[in-house]
Amino acid sequence: MARAYLDHASTSPLRPVAREAMVRALTDLVGDPGRIHEEGMAARVALETAREQVAALLGARAREVVFTSSATEAIAAAVWGAGKRGRTKGIAQDGRVHHVATAVEHSAVRASAGRDGDVTVVGVDGGGRVDAEEVLAAVRPSTACVHVQWGNHEVGTTQPVAEVVAACRERGVLVHVDAAQAVGRAPIAFDELGADLLSLSGHKLGGPAGTGALLVRRGLRLPPLLLGGDQERARRAGLEPVAALVGLGAAAEELSSTMADEVARNEAQAERVRAAAAHIDGVAAYGDPDHRLPHLVCLGIEGVEPQGVLLGLDRAGVAAHSGSACSSESLEPSPVLEAMGVDAHRSLRLSVGWSTTDADIDRAIAALPVTIDHLRSLAAGLGDRAG
Image (cartoon, rainbow, N blue to C red; front, side, top):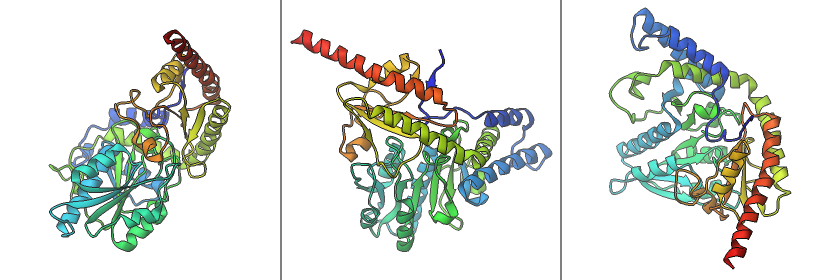
């Protein structure tokens, strides 16, 4: 049975162009890119080509791209570097720096910032969108960095990133943008935006797992998180995984030419899911209706537990996800949905991507009401027997 993979927001399948580039690199590139022999120089050329490809997709200079193992590492490096810089500049109070983060940031941002210093969490409205003025109002003299995601990983809501960045630049405060969900789904021009730091993930855009990057604004010097070598211009120690990064570069280069078409197709596919769900009783769409990423649909479903929905869809050949308790890695309710003031226990997330077909959407649209009706019937039957 053909399956419909609708969990691209978690990880997207490897693009064929990335796989082919990686196979060639694994076969042909054997040297350390930090060495000056022929094998090393060949690896260096391949690595720097990948850096240029990623930079081109993001409207950045190649020298602003620091390769990492993941968006999580990139975020940790941004938080650590900004905090260390703040302490060096003498803005810490009682030995602690301060971070500002929205209530819907990814757990990687919340955990890293909380470990580094004090954090002010700025709330969001019912659609998951933050007010830029409230973000700026939370800034203190001891603020080392403001963190604002480009688009949310659970409900797809996009944030007023340009407003926040411009205001932070006026205040002389560093701003970090988590763009893991947005890269490849929204046009990003890093240099025009003026952000100091931007983190991204390779596997969410169809590159290989184990790759990511932190963009560091030209002229900004941050202490590195990982020490031990001078790789990445002494900004991230450790031998670069050249073949994997070649795959990331190939995926980025393809996206530079295909993104507009992919976004248009994904928007139409997501809208079909949203429209079909609107006809199911007790199902509501979460997120801002006007400011949202094109590939993600989050639904609240009354009367059934999320793991039952996920299992039912899986049996019908549809892979999806829930940010709710018991159906993800965390045992806690979704902090994103809690911050929005909606039911944080019963959500369903369907997300499309480069490989999604219209047949995948057909399968999901057919399976969703059947699955929900079946679960509600079971719950009603159990209630009758209990009575």
